[in-house]
Length: 152
Image (cartoon, rainbow, N blue to C red; front, top):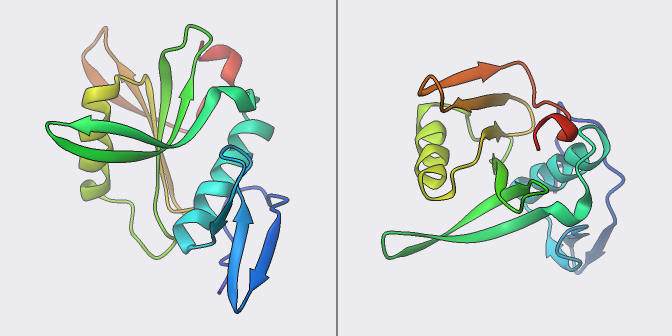
């Protein structure tokens, strides 16, 4: 596996290899997962949220299941506020997958059933941060996510 250097802080991931397959111990799900390029990005994003944005680990869920109409979908990462409402929705892509209008439509579709205040689209190389301004009924592109204490 080619571990693409990401535009995120280096994460101290617990990696193992068995029969040529790399695995990562997920800090949130507490189990070993096959280390796909998307998982590489997801684990770095989780580490970023905990270490850089000061999100308590217990308020993060990974591979969060939702229903859209009758179809089951999985959100890569959600962050709960202290009020137990989802505040941040994160969509992770493999580094070679572009962050574009298609990705934005995907996360917006997911958020229609979740109602998060912040969206983060990332492939580890490019990041798009969005604040849902409900007062003005518009999306606002922001430079970065605020620290957790300003979100809740």
